Length: 89
Image 1 (tube, rainbow, N blue to C red):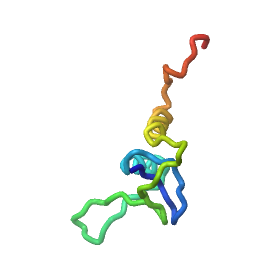
Image 2: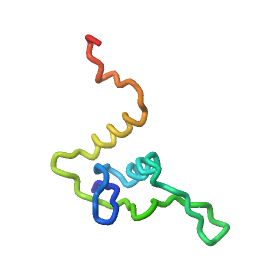
Image 3: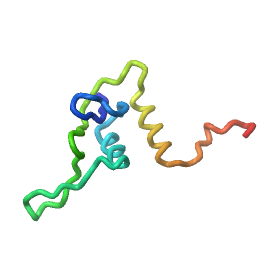
Image 4: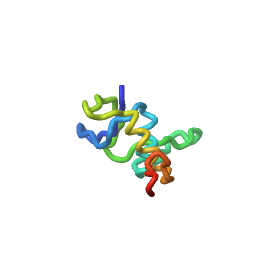
């Protein structure tokens, strides 16, 4: 089942194949902070800010979570995608 970012009951992101994919995108968007527990022996752990949460969801019928992930990775890399360059370019 795919996962997405939610605030309260509103879905804020596309659906992605894994929870880890959504965590990665939330971190890049600045929505993840390191929280320190009361126990000094434990290292800080990542948590989502405010009321954000990552939950399983159903993808919309026209949505492909795997394509969403590939698009996000391509966008994050910012590199030239050879399959999008036309021969005339």
